[in-house]
Structure formats: structure tokens, C-alpha cells
Image 1 (tube, rainbow, N blue to C red):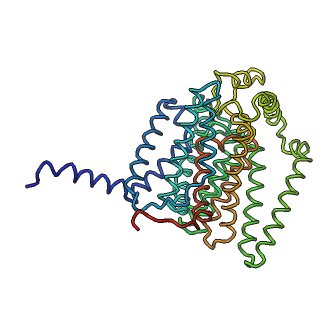
Image 2: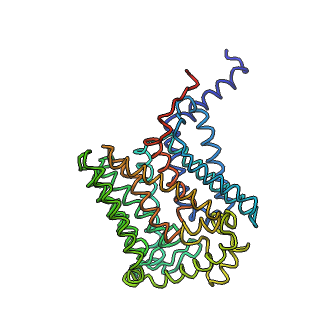
Image 3: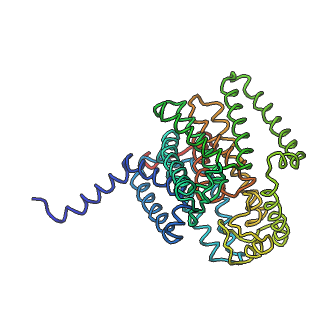
Length: 432
């Protein structure tokens, strides 16, 4: 007969086995990605308290899971220092922030999603992350189409609390469960990349893969977003460049890399000097005018704190200065700077901007080199995801919070796993 005193150790051991199991890691990955991609939906239905409660619960479970998996998780050289430096500077901005409670909340929110991203990157390989992302995005894009049809065709009424206008009968613009057409467009573009990699890798049935591509393409087209048109063109060009590189011999590859770099710099200069024509052709005048007005005011205010910025907030709090002032002067309520790079500079100054620039540059360069040189097609996914996020960052701040920040951190950690200078350093494990 088993003694009652032996029950707690047996129960604890069983819980530990569950937390360390691959099935638990797979389930956690699905839930983490699902929450990150549907924050607008959850916040609209449950409020900030409900969303924060879910995130705290996920962080707790991820922590317990990592502790249970500690003997089989290799940390050496895997956590990019660039992430730590940028987040640390955002946290330090609490010292001079004029809204310390909002800064504390913003940094905590940022760290929570960053930690969840690191958990996903450590317990799942890249191919498993791609599959989980594909499953989550299929559900959310399908739900978006369903709600748009319900709103625009069946009820002919907007679903106000979700921000759905119900314009599908006029072929858009469509917002889905993501709150805005630009965010829906970005998620649809990420889905297209994900579904294409799944289909080429034959990880899903061909019929399911083609149907998924059509679903993402319809969502993308119905957003009618000029911002996503530009991002999509750049992603297509990046994908073609990677295909070219992967088919080029190793000896000639570095010359092609230099040629592509020169072509990219030339294209950036051409876009800069021809930006007015490009904006007119894309019919993005009204959107650009809103952004330009906001950026002008931000640039004027940031000159008061150029080195350190105003203090990190992440998602803008409209009830404190200077964010309330920006809403007043532009006549539009904003939750971000509508440009990740300007937003970072405004919130954490030149030092924070440079730290962020190092973070995204290292992540992109490492991911690009891995995608160019590794045989497996799955390495293309982080590189193209980063291209989409970084280009979209010139017109949206999605890159800094929630799903954008989560994907940036996952891609950065995965790139460091495959290409980190610290991997070459001597390391003595606990077991040795």
C-alpha cells in the first residue's frame, strides 16, 4: 500500500514530465502564437485585464516548462545580446520618463512577449514554428473572412467593437479580427509566406496548401492597402533574390550578395528621391498625409529629448503627455507613431534607436545568410518574415509590440542559433 507521504513527490514528478514533454511545448507554441496574433480580438472582447491575465498565465507556464526542460535546453550563445541591450535601455528609460507607470507597464508587456518568443524559439525548431504559425493564421484569416461576410453581407451592419466596417460588398477595405486593414494585410502577407513554405516543403496536403494560399491572397487583396502593396513587392523581390542565391555556386555566391546589396542601396535611393511620384501612383496620399503630419510633430517634440527620448511606452497611452498632445495637434487618436523607427527614436532617443537598429540588422543579416547558404527551405521563412516586418515598419509600428515583436524575437533567436559568434567560444556544461 502506497504511503500518503510518497504521493506529493510522485505528483510533482508527473507534472514535471508533462511540462517537459514535446506535446506540452507544441500546445504552448500554438497558444502563444494564437494570443500574439489575436491581441486586438482578445482585448476587444475581454479588455486589457483579460488579455494581461492570459499573458501572465502563459509566462508562468512557459517558465515552469523551461525549468522542467532545463537539462535538454542549450542556452549557450543562443540569446542575442542585441535583444537584451535594447530591452534594458527601454527599461532604464523609466528613470527619466514623465509617465513611469505607463513605462513600467510597457516594458513589462514587451518583456513578456519577448520571453514567450524566446520560449518558442528554444523548445521548437524552425519548421515546427512555421507549422504552428500556419495553423494559427489559417484560423484567424478564416474567422476574419467569416465575420466580414456576416457584417457586410448578412447583417449589413458594422461590428463596431472589433472595428469591422462591413465593406466586403464593395470589395473592401477589410479589417478582419486585426483592427485595421494594414495589420490584416501584414498578417495575410506573413500567412502567404508561411503557407508557401509549408506547401514547398510538402508538410501539408497539396489541396490544403493551395486553399490556404487562396485564403491569404483574398484577405490581402480585400485590404486594399497601398502600404501592403509596397511591402508585398519587396518581399517578392527578396524571395526571388534568395532563390537566385540558393541556386548559385558557393564560390560565386559572395559576389552575387555584394551585387544584390548594391542594387538594394540604389533602389532605396531611387525610392527616396521618387517618393512623391510613388505615393501618387499608389493613391496613398491621404494615408501619407496623416503619417507625415504625425511624424512632423514627433520630430519637433523629440528635439527636446534627442539622446534619451521621452520614455518607453510601447502602445501609446493617450491620456499622458506628449501622446495626448500629439492626438490633439493631429486631430487623430493614435496608438503608435505609424513608423517603428521614428517611434523608437521618439520613445528612447538616439541610443535606443541605435540599439534597435543593431538588433534588426543582426537578425536580418544572420537570417539572410542562413537562408542563402543552408539547404533546407525552412531557413527562408525567418528571412522573408523579417523583410516583411522591417519594410512594414516604415509605415506601421507593429514591429515593436505584440505579434511583430514576438516574430522579431523568434527570428532573431533562430538566426543566432544558426549563426552566432558566441557559438565558437569555449563552454563548459554543468554535466562536464
